[in-house]
Length: 274
Image (cartoon, rainbow, N blue to C red):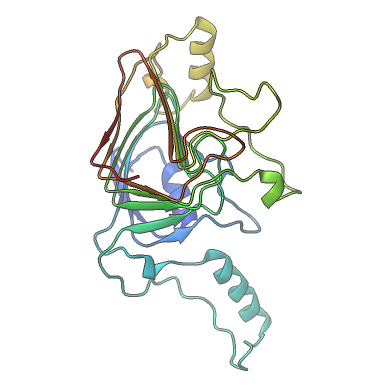
């Protein structure tokens, strides 16, 4: 497809595919969903790394009532294939992928104790009319914005974010690498969480030659390769956003948001509720 296309998604897997497609710049979310652990696929535990500019927004007809449960659909499909019956004696039908009628309202993404998005130093996100809940990342329970990343959140809600170690929710599963953030460490060995819902470090520190080469190598061959720079500060903005029932565990900091800025970039909260 041609660059800058808009796509509509209704499941976590469809959203993941849209994020992987470098031609997509606008993602319209049709209904609420969770980030499932399916047999052959799962959302990255430490969040999807955004390495380009994109917009993520709710469809005007979106509502939480239209939520799909992909894990239940997978189980029902298996049961239907085996000819099993439900507890009430009725045959189990294969699940329908059509969404129920939806009323006006924001789409809800249940992160299922994962990090939803990590905005990298070459990425940018404009998000509107979304509710993100139940995140479990250590550096931003739901969203992590790295130095140099661009982000704007409008009319969004962040709720129920609190760090949960991967070992506690999936003891037999190897974790994907955590994003490295200079200046935040656990010198005494205690696992501290920073930003129950959101972690933002806005820094225009110039990269060394080695860091610049590594950043370019990480996105070599993609459309993001040309946007890797020595380091540019961007404003990170939250407008009319709400933060509820988030917590930084382990003696960390930033119950709702951990924010640190250096240089010329700003982190702006405009008419937000905590």
